[in-house]
Length: 267
Image (cartoon, rainbow, N blue to C red; front, side, top):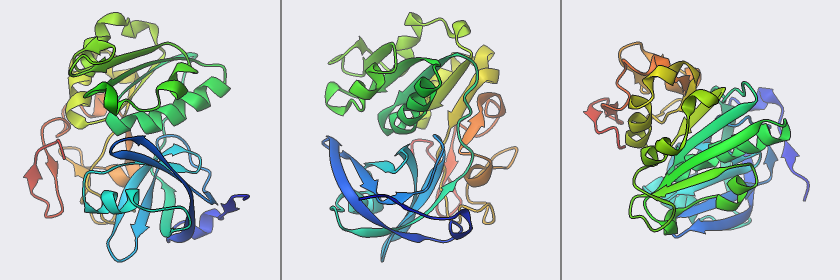
């Protein structure tokens, strides 16, 4: 089936999409392929409308794919969609990663590997050298290993030591010289990203970070996703933000939820 296409003028509202395929990646992660050609860039996101339940932000793991980690009611419902099921999509939204230089490093953890893999494949198509450092809790949680191996050197860390280097993703930094890379791209759980960033502050001017905040409107009006103290609206000025803008922000310290009150940066 040829993908449907939507003109940019229709993307301010949800458009109907049909799930074409569902691929099980790990016990609690699935990739959904849909029939719309939204022409996203790696790092952008869409708002997925699960009718009767919620609308949630999802990063692209490919031109017509999202990769879903079952962590809450909405994501569990989305992960249970089967081929032929429809949902509303609004996007692509936000700023993408920007490819710079000829030698890049991808650092990710968990389902944050998804947009980085999409980016790495775009970089490879432009003959850019790609190195990847990815971290997971265990070998059972490893995502997109084969896709990343096709791009270049790959280092894997696991918290329990069941694959690769024993430890958090930052344990893999000792195997790398960050000064060798023209640009570094970071995505994953916020504590993991802050751990990486706090150890590499001298390189923050060349680190692009994809961050997650609570989105309501996704058009920059409601302020739910604003970062203290600068007031960055993550939904429109992000989700990709240069790391040097995050060093003195709330990033890695706390985040706001649906009520606007501060909570753990873990979610």
